[in-house]
Amino acid sequence: MRRYFKLESFYPLLIAVCILVFSFSKFWNHSRVIDWDMTLYYSYLPALFIYDDIKFEKPVKEWGEKHFYMSSDAEGNKYVKMTSGLAILYSPFFFAAHAVALMSDTYEANGFSSPYPFALLLAVLSYTLLGLWFLKSFLSEYVSKGIASLSVVLIYAGTNLPYYSFVEPMSHAFNFSLICFMLWLFQAYRKQVKLGLAIALGLIGGLLILIRPTNVIALLFPLILLIWNKSLSPKQWWQHGFIAVAMIFLAISPQLFYWHHMTGNWVIYSYNDERFFFGDPEIWKGLFSYRKGWFVYSPILWLSIPGFYWAWKKVQRETVVALAVLFLAIWVNFSWWCWWYGGGFGARSMIDYLPFMAIALAFTLQWLLQQSKAIKVTSAVILTFITTWSIFMNKQYKSGIIHYDSMSKELFWKQFFVDHYIKDYESYLDHPDYEAAKRGEEE
Image (cartoon, rainbow, N blue to C red; front, side, top):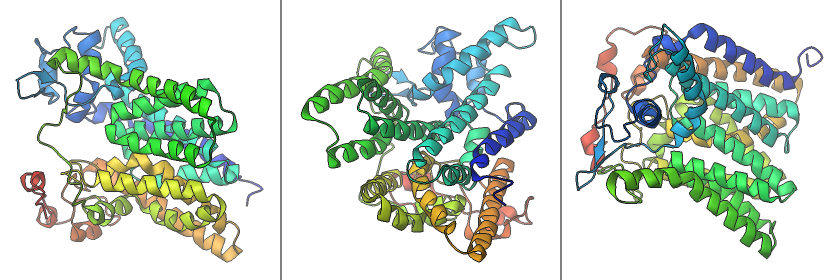
C-alpha cells in the first residue's frame, strides 16, 4: 500500500481538500462571520482605518446590526472588551479586502461587505494550515516525516478545529497556529542558540498573551525545558532573556496604549464581573460532558492518551513538561465561570493546546505502525471511523444540529450520525443557567 501512497502525502492532501472545501462552501456568503464576539475582535481595524473613530463616538448602523457593544469601567470609561491581538493577525487580509472594496463598483468599502468576511475566513484557514506545517516539522524531530504528516491531519480532522478554521475565525485556530510556530522556533533555538530566534520567540509569546492572556501557560514549555536542560549560559540567559521579554512587551504594547487612551489606565480587567473559580474547576465536565466535553467533540484525543507513555519512554523531559502544561491549561480554562464558554462547538478554549496532544498522538501512531498487519488494519478502520465521525460532528454543529450550549447525553446519542433534527429536539436540550454560573453555582 505504501508503494502507492506514502504517509508524507497526507498533509499536502489535506491542503488540497481544504482549498476545495473553502472554494465551494463559500461560508462568507452563508454564515454571519462578523458578528457577536467576532465583531469585538475585529472592531479595531475598521474603527482605525475606515471610520477614524476608535472611541466609537459616531457608530454606523452596521455595528449595531453585528451586535457590537462597548464595555465600561467603574468610572464610565468605555472600551472594547476583547484585546487587539486578533486584529493584528487579521490585518494583512483586511487591508487586501479593503483595497478590493475600494477598487470595486460592487462592494462598499465599509468593513462589512463580502470582501471582508471572505478575508477573515481566508486568514484563519491560511494560519491554520501554516500552523499545521510548523507542527509537522516539529514532530518530525521525534517521529518519521510520514507519521508527523499523518498526526497533524488527524489532530485536525479528528477535533473541532475544522469548524473554527472554516466558519468562525475566533481566536482558537490562531492561537493553535501560534503555539505550533512557537514549538518550531523553540526546536530551532535549541539546535542553534541565536538572538534572532529569541526575538521571534518573544514576539510570538507576546502575541499569544495579547490574544488570550491565559496562553502564558504555553510559554512554560520552552522556558522549563531551557532551564531543565541547562541549554543557556548565564550570559545568554541575560541577553536573550532580556530581549525576549522586551519583545513580549512590544507585542502587547498596542493594547496598553489603547487602554490608556480609552480609560487613562495602562492595564484594566476588561471582563468586569466575569471571573475564575480556581478552587472549584469543572474539569470533569470540561473534558467529558455532553455539553462541551473536549474528548467528546474531539474524539481523536482518546488515542493521544496512551501516546504519552510511549513519548515518555523516548523523550521524558518533553513529555513531563507537555503534561504539566496541559494540566495547567485544563485547570485554568475550566475554572472560568462559564466553563463551557457560551456558544461554541466543543471545548473551544482547549483548541489552543492541541499541539501538545499531537505530540502524544504521534507516538501512538508510531507504536501502531510497528505492530502486526492485523493491528494496523484494525487501527486504520478505527482512525477512519473517528475522523469521519468528527468531521460529521463539525458539519452538524455548522447546521445547528449540535446545539451551541445545551447538548445533553440523550440528544447527543439520538443525533448520532443523524443529519437532521430529530423529533422533539427541543425537549432534549439541557439549558445552562448563566447567572448561577457567575456565582459558581451552576449544576
